[in-house]
Image (tube, rainbow, N blue to C red; front, side, top):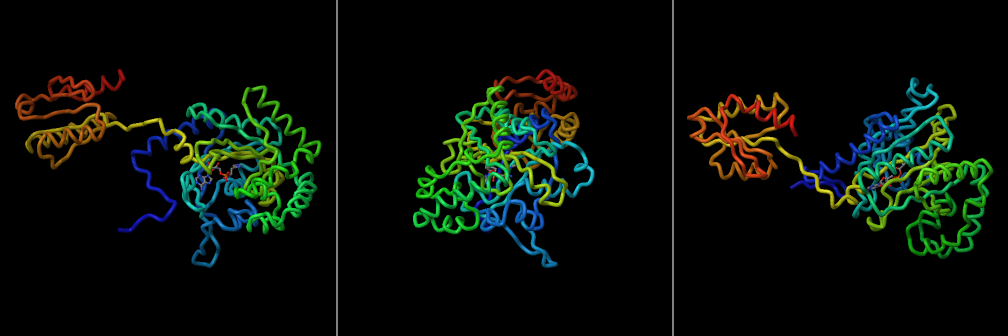
Amino acid sequence: MIQKPPGVEDIFPDRSPKFNFIINTAKEVFQLYNYREVILPVMEYTEVFARGIGDSSDIVTKEMFTFEDRGGRSLTLRPEGTASMVRAYVENGEYNRLALCKFFYHGPMFRAERPQKGRLRQFNQFGAEMFGSDYPWYDFEVISLMNEITTRLQIKNYTLLINSIGCPDCRRPYVGELFKYYSLHEQELCEDCKKRLYTNPLRLLDCKVEGCITLKQDAPKINQYLCQSCNDHFHKTRDLLEEHSIQYIHDPLLVRGLDYYTKTTFEFVTTKLGGQNAFAAGGRYNNLVELFGGKPTPAVGFAAGIERIELLLEELSLKEYLDVYIAYSSNNALPVVIKIAKELRRNNISCDFDPTAKGFKTQFKRADRENARFSLIFGDDEIAKNTATIKDMSSGNQVQIPIDSVIQYFKEISTTG
Ligand code: HAM
């Protein structure tokens, strides 16, 4: 038997309704805020992510699925959507001329991480990105979007963490202070962080190794280093959240695993997912468009992990139903069954039957398994009298009606709900 690779999943109909419910809820909210869908490719030239996410990030150094095409160019399965979105935005001459653009996307992302609960190698995200304004309103808007999605999905017991990691100007002296602090503790750092200290000291704050978490508590905090403009931006964003009653915690040590952020960063976290505590995250990235060769364009966005949200909705049970299962007693009835099935489907009433059916018992079992709302029964008696019996599967009530009235009967039920 050929099995699937580790960290990828088959999502069967026991899960797909919930999965689609999450995506559709997000889409509804995106549309309310005038975000429009972009369908992005799942692979890009590797430099899109190396440049966008950062050469020294964990994603780029350890987690990308990279391979060469037949011409020897390096391609990568996208580990996230933002760098692709920026590449697409810069490449598309029409949209990048507009003063303001709001986009959303959803689809599979790929990261070669060690698989565990809530951490997959192929996982799905939905995300939103806004291009063209540095106004804190939009930091607030993308946070509100995710907040509204959590409300509609009835996700409870989560915390919104926010921080500002400043702009390159105020971050430079801060990173210098971080380097000084961690240099004094170099021997206590994990092996990865010993390297990070010299490549990207900000990453040390993101390490999940216990010793490094302990050291982090006394590390210098960025808020003391923010320049006037970053500080004002952060305060305005926080004021907006407060004015609109969105609760948050300011975590001055919150940094993100991607290098493109400037100013606001945020995470929606929960204690229900073990080590994988964030189910959505994002922030502002004012320099990324320029880094991709576009004109300077401030931007802000977020992405959420659909499988992680699915784990948070454990109690929600969503079933898919079939309107009608058609059961029949003998092969003589099959032409009638086929004709009725065709007409039901033409009238948008879902139905199914087994063209090789033998015996009612297995057919009724199948009707149950398919969550049929009604069974439409053609026994010898019904065929002889040119009728059909309709059985309501939840109440067990049955009626016998002329064959000619069957379609009308179901049409009336479907319009009255
Ligand atoms: P991220 O924090 O890397 O940010 O991922 C966002 C979300 O994707 C996470 O909070 C988590 O729910 C989900 N996720 C990440 N890795 C995995 C995994 N291995 N398995 C399952 N779920 C996962 C970004 O991707 C940025 N592009 C967000 C952003 C958009 N920032 C600005 N705009």
